[in-house]
Image (tube, rainbow, N blue to C red; front, side, top):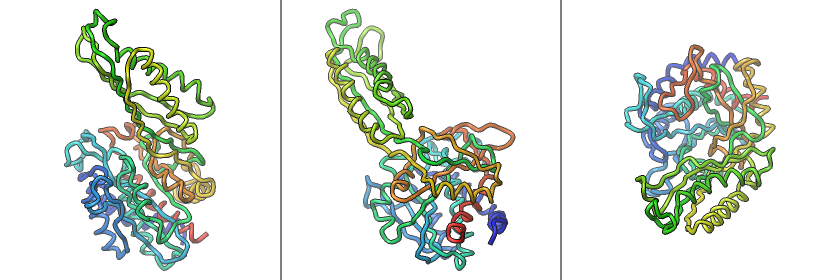
Amino acid sequence: MDVNYFIRKANDIYSSVVDYRRNIHKNPELSFFEHNTSNLIANRLEELDIKYKRIGRNPENQDAEPTGIVAYVGEGEKCIALRADIDALPIFEETNLDYASQNDGVMHACGHDMHTAMLLGAAELLKEIEQDLNGTVMLIFQPAEEKFPGGAKVMLEEGLFDVKKPEAIFGQHIDPQGKLSTVALCEGPTMASTDEIYINILGKGSHAAQPHLGNDPILTAAQIVIAFQSIMIKHRNPLDPGVLTIASFNSGNTTNIFPDSAQLKGTLRTYNNLWRFEMHKHIETTIKHICGLYGCDYELNIVKGYPPLNNSKETTNFVRLHSKDVFGEKNVLEFEPKMWAEDFAYFAQTVPSTFFFLGVQPEDKLLPALHNAKLAPSEEAMLLGTANLAYLAYKYFNL
């Protein structure tokens, strides 16, 4: 069974894949609340006579029905997994598409609607050739990629791999900066860890003309922001990528009074997990010393997020080699690692994995970045994206 079979079959069901995508896009749901999306997936799997179970409960509401789904095609001992994420973002859509979000303030601005639609399409292609599969394909429809602790972590903790553990897992994500009908991937560090930093500086308010009678939290917070850039230089190997960014600074509301407190929010990102946790200590030490200099107290909360995502050499070489069959050799490109974050990293820590990127940029215009209210990827990308997922699964068992 050659690659042309998969491309031809993907073309046959392309209109259905578009329908899945538009239905999901029109009805987006936030992390751990993807009940309608989950039902759409389950209904389609039942139509295809694909066995599945629900897994992945909301950690904040254990009584709610799980919104994640894991399904199986084939019955061989050898097993691999394909993963798609299903949640949307808290964004007001501004695309003016006919199928734009009907849920105010919620939008599929990261392409999860396309990921889910393509995996449903791949499920149909694989079901048609189930008797020719020399193994089992696990289909993971994962909730809550966009919210800590991450749906991948929750599914794993609930026993996702207890019954059958895959020997490899593949995840596909759209890339608005990638040209249509291209795939990009890289070996090793691909996406960063992500920790959220929340700092509350507690000072003593005073009249701006009498600063000596108070303890200025704004000055203290400003010094912390500057010092963070210094500790990045001091404590980070210059050959290791890392970002420590304060993205929110809130304090005060008038011109002649400095307030009692100031709030900072930011993010720490790196590929180096050891240095990551060392930096947690340096961050607090820096805050403590600067607050001491200016007579302020502090409250620090570092919310530990996703680990770094590393693509294995073996699975990445496999995806690179066989994606060339689908897209053509010149259209399989090297991906520049990003400081984005992905909870697919939890899967990659468990089994050899590759997370790769599907170009969705139309030929006639540039697209805004991911998480943008105007993002409107080219749906044409889903034809080869669907074919490639199914073809990779088939080839893994039939080399």
